[in-house]
Image 1: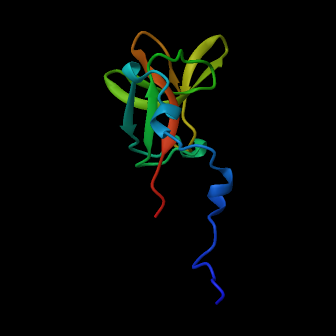
Image 2 (image 1 turned 45 degrees about the vertical axis):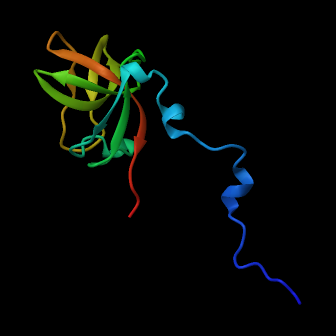
Length: 120
């Protein structure tokens, strides 16, 4: 009697050496990290879409080029931190949104270190 397998091996099995713990991989500083849901499309050009979940690290110093969560006049926003003409700006990555000068009315709440979304 010939035995035939009922399926085929998963290609993922070839790449898996050990289980992946996404929490440990994305959350470097658990006490200083949080997850937030994106509302809006101002960062669509960076691949961050409405409804995505972000992992934000408050312990990671914001650097030029990083995507950050900031509080601007009491409102939370998500933008890319840029250094232009000697000043820091929060810059959107979609048409129809304006740059925001980082001044005394802006507080950086953390650096985005991960994005998650469900695929339909």
